[in-house]
Each structure stands twice: as structure tokens, then as C-alpha cells.
Image (tube, rainbow, N blue to C red; front, top):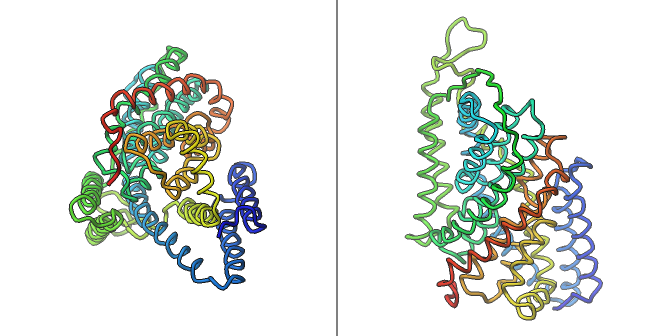
Length: 445
């Protein structure tokens, strides 16, 4: 049934808009973003089911909800493993040691600007753009605590770099992960976006670097050493990624199964660390023989996952799924991809992601599933990933850094550089068609 003009459709659209407005103002209300969207999802599907029950076709809504639940479950299990590994490496002081190393190398602000940006670009394809941005921002705050101008411009640089780096890897952003898990693009195909992503970062970075202070920060002399097992944990994370890719490419199994297998690697290694943890007699702090206060516990790292983020994805997938079930996405797809054309539609997806956030936008695109060749699917993957850099509120990385560097990195300090970021955004689209023209006309498998 097409309910777009029915009271059910209008009510559902209003409820979703209201819920997402509460997500946008989370910084001011301190209401976790998962709460309004989960409530909205329940209400939207309840009124849809009510109308379908009145028409005696209630089984269709049940099947639809189960379909979207499966879609969420795959994403949930994948992300839970990735978050657990990142938390475990953080507990082993991997990221703290990196920060300490950079701070004590006595690099100039100019060099630190480029080092943190390039590191963010290459780390985000592995540990995701949000985590990368937080780690690099910690470095900025440590070395630039006496220079607010450097922190401000450095945060903009990190947001752009992390989002650009996350666009050419299935592990770099939620949107790329969803595209890969849906089977639209193969794992290796994402790397075709490397050059456009690099252009997207380098153009604004080169412009912003001209405004970086030409000074030398003071080192604090603190040296942080990684805990026992940190390097082996990084190796196991690499093995986990390889397992997920192999399961998907060679065994044609969903990637989440490979990630969950990799979670077992961490848990078994965690068992070894726990069994070999020995307390020193008579020490009130109970230090282990390797200088650890508390033995490693993999389940503790699972509990530390970003549950608000994971449940937010549930709410978004269910809400957008409900709007699609009502019929709105069919109408939107008809207008955007048939009347405007795929290229314009996909560029607008990137611009919309700067305002609305790229996750619900990409969920909508995947549920519409317009008939596009691989060049256009690569384009929408690129624009959805990097479009959020246009505004500080357009990506999870930007929102997180506004909280972490509160008062120094703000909406308006980012907005100052939006023209430079927009230049990189436009140029990356042109470069994409230049280097990936051979994908035109080739349809996804």
C-alpha cells in the first residue's frame, strides 16, 4: 500500500523529523541520540501495522520488520567486534603511546599539522574515522594546549582527513561498511576511491596549512609504554580483518561472521593474558608482574562498546525502513535518480550528509537501491563519506571533536574553512570520473 498521502505516512514523517531534530541538538539537550530514534521506530511501525491490520494484511509488516532486523543484526555484530578491538588496544595503551611519541619528537606546528592529518587519513580505513579523529585530537590537545589557533585549524584538518580516509575502505565509515555488507561493491573495488579521497583531503589541507602558526610547541617529556600483548593484539586485529574479507570474498559468507570469528581470537588471547597475570604479594595496588594493575578482560572491553551508537543504528534503520515501507523512498528515488539523474542525485547525497548525517542518507539510498553502474555506486560512497566534512555537524568525527576540544573547535571555526573543503569535495568528484571512468556501464553483481 502507498501510504505517502495517508495520515499514517504524514504522521510517520513528522515523528522521524522530530526524532532527528532531537539527535541534532544532542549537544545541548544531553539526550542520547539512540533514545528518540528508537522510540520513533517503534511508533512508526506501530501505526503502519495498525493500518495494515485494518486491511487484514498484518503478516506483511511482520516480514518487513524481520528483514530490517536482519540488516541491523549484521551491522551490529560487525561493529561490536571492531569496537571491542579498538577498546582493547586503547586499554593496552596503543594510542596513548602513539600520542606520547608524537608529542616528544619536537615537531613544529606545521609538521604536526601534516603528520596528524596524514595519520588520520591512513588510520581511518582501519580503525574507522570516529576513533581516528578522537586519537589524533588527543595529540593536538597535548601539543597545542598553549595555542588555540593551532588546535582549531588542526581539528578541521583531522575531521576532513578522517572522513576522506574512511571513504576508500569498507572499515572506514558506517556508510562504506553498509555498502560492502550489502554486496554492492567488492572489497578491492573500494580502493578505486583512494585517489579521489586523497584529493578531497589534500586540497583543503594545503590551503589550511598556510594559516598554521610557524612555531615550535613545548614537549612535556612524558613517555608512555604499551602494555604486554599490545603488538600481538594489533596483529590479531589485522587477522580479524583478513578473516572477514576472506569469508566474504572466497566463502561467500556475510562479513560479520568473519569478524565474530576474529572476536574469538581476541577472547582466547585475553584468556592467555589473564592466566599469566601474576599479582605481587604485599602490594596494595596489586600490580601484576608486567606492571598491570588489573588483568585484561575481553568482556570488559565488549561492555565498553559505544552502545548508544549501536542502538542509534537500530533506530535509524528501522525508521528509514518504515518510511520506505510506506512508499516515500520510491517517490524520492523516482525524482532523484530518474528525473535529476544519478550524478546530480549522488552529489546531493553528499551535500545532504553535511546537514542530516550520512548514515540515514545512505540507509535510504540502499533501501531505494536505484539502478546504477559501479561508477555511480562508487560516487555515492565517496560523497556520502566526505560530504559530512562540509560542516562540523555533518559527521560523527566532527561532532565528537566539538565535545573533545570544546571552545577551541566550534561550528563557526569549521565553517570558516567550508569553501576550501567544498573545493576539495568538487575536485574529488571530477577526479573520480577521471580515474574511474572504466567503471561506467558496469553493473554491480
